[in-house]
Image 1 (cartoon, rainbow, N blue to C red):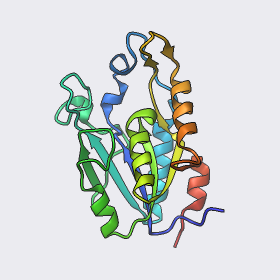
Image 2: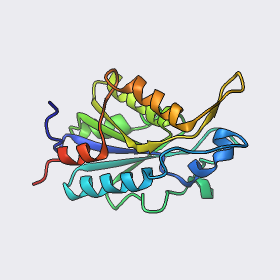
Image 3: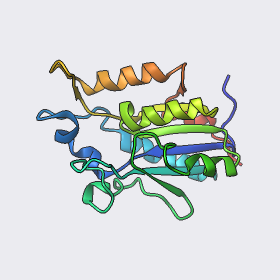
Image 4: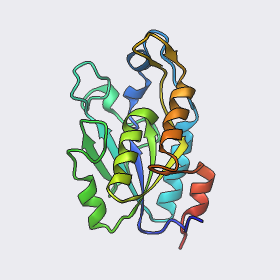
Length: 195
């Protein structure tokens, strides 16, 4: 049984930026995304974590790739409406998939005695998955909230267009039980310690 999420727990919101909606970039001419309700689910988690005075951290992706829609200083680099850091919340700038590579995220979490990481955001199979795997490998008690994540379709090397639900579900299946415990938004909110 999972113990209540307490002050040792952080909500890590990965790359909630407008550039995720450039679906032609991510999924080709027929680009599409799964889980259109992800934004509402992330907002519910933000409300819950903030209401319990738990730590919230955002990553923002500032891609090294010139053609990427996720670049700071461009419209695609802006936060999604309603998913914006509040005063005092950490914003970690990254330029690769994992929120832990080339950033001070680990140092900031260790300074605050954080041992449990609850990860949500975009895209499930890219930056979310990379960050979850690394959190687990670094010894954090790692959780993933799939209904607060989303991804796009992907075109395979063989030309097959993989549906975004398939891409999302395979990523979650690969992480759950090995690198993280997958929880619903409702279950996550139930586990929040409230003073």
